[in-house]
Image 1 (cartoon, rainbow, N blue to C red):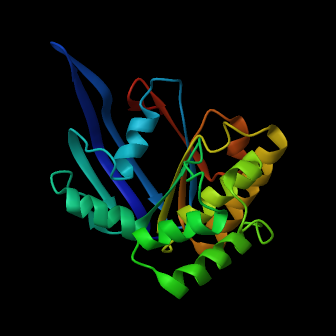
Image 2 (tube, one colour):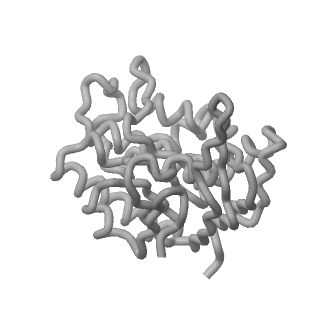
Length: 224
């Protein structure tokens, strides 16, 4: 099966005064198309830093990342932006929706950033909202929707442009257990149907139900 994302020997260091903090200490991970992987570990272990590097939001100190067959060069910001736009979708714990835009408009805006505009964007946004079960909520503002419905908008937005990889950071943390189960089932369905790689950073043991495997990070290292 073709690799959707490859990370080799990833390290990350930050300077804090005279001290160098080593957050990641050499992590290697390969995720195939259609595979669902949970990334677990205690707070402060480096999970979010790692997924930020995979998502071209943060550069590694050393190591190599490849997304959809394309080499990631952290010294070329424009290339990082191109890879994010063409190959990656993101889902966050806090939804990150624009409060003054409807569900439809939030998804259309994400499509616009990927170069899809006008009637094509309106059509695709509507289809994506249908896929995540929000057929009757397209013209609602986020303030008039539940947490689960807002996360479904975020998932629809992550699907914009048909990305090869979806990265989700604690996507169920703000949801009650019933809604979290519904969102996880939706994640699984979409990943399987579309053959997308899905990486989920989580503390939620329920996520394991939909995953093919678990990668655990402890003290900046991938646990055996």
